[in-house]
Amino acid sequence: EPDKVEVTVAKATPTVTAPTAKTLIYTGEAQELVTAGSTTGGEMQYSLDGTNYSTTVPKGTEAGNYTVYFKVVGGDNYADTPAASFTVTIASADTGNTKPGAADALTYTGEAQALVTGGSVPGGDLLYALGTDATTAPALDSFTKDVPTGTNAGTYYVWYYVKGDANHNDVLP
Image 1 (cartoon, rainbow, N blue to C red):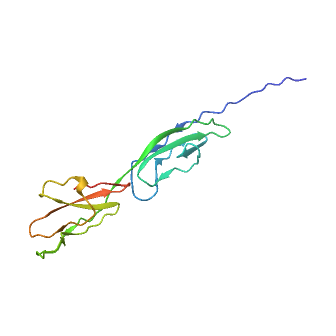
Image 2 (image 1 turned 120 degrees about the vertical axis):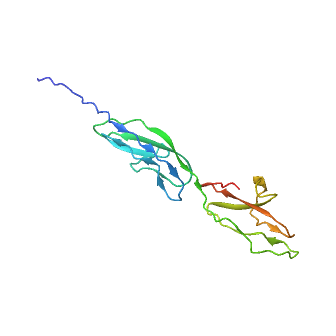
Image 3 (image 1 turned 30 degrees about the vertical axis):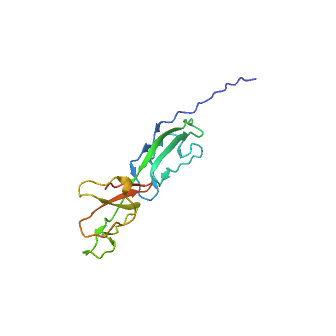
């Protein structure tokens, strides 16, 4: 009876070029978080939770930090690689704003009058405060959403400050 020899061919180790983090700023739209990685064998897979993987490059919308996991599933001829991860940040965007304008010529009436016409801020709140002069901004905690008013004749110094939301930066007075 003939003898037989069993030979095992081991799976090859794939060569992996890891994905890289993109430099991103909040746009309100979903953005790919990484530049795709590559492999000489198998299939590059990605995950944002370390459990559910797919070949689709992960996306993020909101400003903040995202942990991106990646690994290679080798298949029949290549070995799997262990998962690795890194952090990708979508930075907060600057708010766009239309600054408040001075009210039309005001004349003393004995009644409180709005000192400015309101501006607008997508991505945050426009806050106001009265200052004592044109060079020293009031403390940030003194700013409110209320348009400042004045009753008496005189000069008023209206300061504004943009308080950004979770996806937008503040714009200081």
